[in-house]
Length: 391
Image (cartoon, rainbow, N blue to C red; front, side):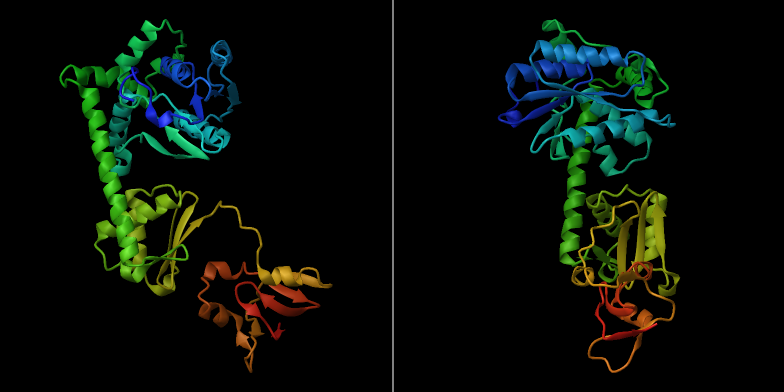
């Protein structure tokens, strides 16, 4: 949809959830969606409890929806007083919206062309790469459905005109005039001055964001091709031998692409430099790089990607299932200097050596469960059955 004169073909026959703030943009989108898709529409209002007017805004959104016979859900968000309250409010809002979305539902937000232009400049000032400069995608997977921005190609002036022509009412967020927020500073102090020299600036910036989006797709396609051609991924790990034969910019592109597929926070340039150094670190250094809750470790020519806050998977070990109901059953972990005897072996072996030969990295070895019955080791997670164990 490039104007309000036609229906949006993408939304035909779909379940729609509108993120409704009560501001002019979301109110205009509410009116448009209700006009064309009245039976497929519901609204969600997120109350951040950051303004003294927040209760009035929630009531306004509910009243607007009731007048149009549109179901409206209110989500209460309570944020701690972080330094970057704007960014944290955004993250919590989208997390809640994602959780609230139903199967195959389309979340519509009222971002428009001016928002896209502002986003591009903000990312540019932060020194972002192609992924940041691509700004906001028109559509992307989100929760159980998709996130869609139907107004992304529409200028703010067109939205204002639509609201006036349809005699719409909306609320004005008092924080929109607070230039301590970077986006407001850019919108109120910088862009008006730039527009006096650069005509059609908003359209030009939005066009640049589109070009960056296409460039991002090319880098993603190249990473996919490199991964497949060189068989780089095995068991969710990256094979460093063929990886290091590529040029550094392609290595970085592959790593960034793979981290994105894992939903890891993108690494900074400094962290990426450390990751590249990790590829050639000596074997006996047990190399690793960490940023936030994310870690990359190298072991036996492979890169391991670890989210330290990821929930441990349920215990599906077949040996556990086999032995757990026996009397005197217990779970233990390895001891220093422990030796074990595997089937078809005539002598005991160092458990440390067995774990090394099995390719299990050092940081995982102490977490492997060992299953005992009456103090006799029966089996070990990821290793197999035993004939007996010497403690």
